[in-house]
Length: 402
Ligand SMILES: *Cc1c(COP(=O)(O)O)cnc(C)c1O
Image 1 (spheres, protein in one colour):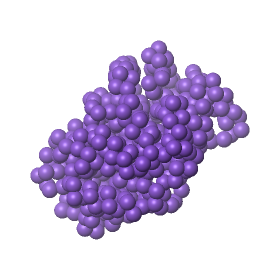
Image 2 (tube, helix red, strand yellow):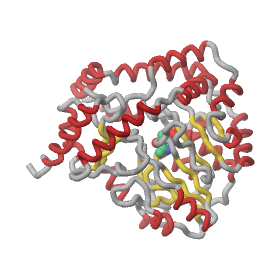
Image 3 (cartoon, helix red, strand yellow):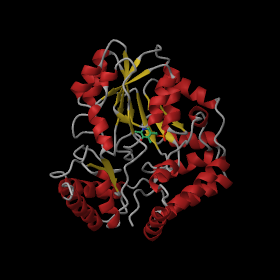
Image 4 (cartoon, helix red, strand yellow):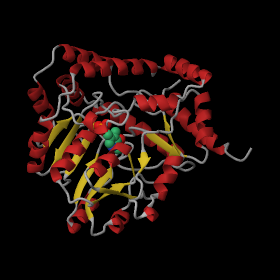
């Protein structure tokens, strides 16, 4: 069985992590080394997570209460909670059809006198063109934040120099993961300085906690190996255990309610050391090959199946979603053929502000309701990728009423 997801971290990285837990580097120096890997170190801050960084950013900006932040309609629930926690109103801007981001007209139409900022998410590995959004924001005097959590691509993109903030995540399910960690690029150095000051008041993530993560995700990496993944998935189905929910929960960074206390921590020195190692060893070729595979898959599928954002350029195809009429049915076909697909329970549609129920993001709702993430990662061979395409095409033709 090809598992739904492979953690993008090698055994050697995990071992290096254990080494750094036992012999931790000096926190301030390893932090500076990570920040120096971005174009302007004085505009860069390493954090425990993107959520930690976003919380610091909004805390440092102190926008007037009730200000609106336009958010591309699909993101993770915690991002919305953090925006709200700072007294701001997240307002969804629906996605353009077949796309993974709003069109420039959709952004423009959503602006109103309460709008203070725009939060763009680059979803699924594709990167939306920031230029028109930055121009629009400039005309209206809005801040622009870009959520690059799903779009890390090494040094080929480290945030738009005109964006007010660009956020990169190295959380568990992200590419080049360090099992946590994030890097924020913030244009206004005084804002960044306030964020840095605030972060130094946070408790430090314990390195033993980080060791626990290394062990836990080494276990999950084992479960994702082909022979083990199949046996595990079958065993779960036999006892009626909801493996999908469990994997998604296990792959999420901060479970449960205590979000703010969990994110308001400084990253531990071993975490930063692993992050530095991951950033330095980023394998451009590996992701280029994967991108080619993604384009080929998109070309095979897109005439018959909706592949949201598959034409976005540039794209790493960090994940490969398809949108079909009968997702459950296609998932069964895929499992029978040895591909464990998932419906991706970690994303959500941003709900409309309470006083404007009519501004629901209908396209995004439709998309998430019928989305399937194919197992698609650099380890999947080109041959297997073609086989997935055949099953998806056959599976979607099967969907006539029985
Ligand atoms: C993963 C993710 C985040 C959160 O990243 P963390 O570093 O885990 O906080 C934010 N936005 C999107 C779109 C994500 O996929």
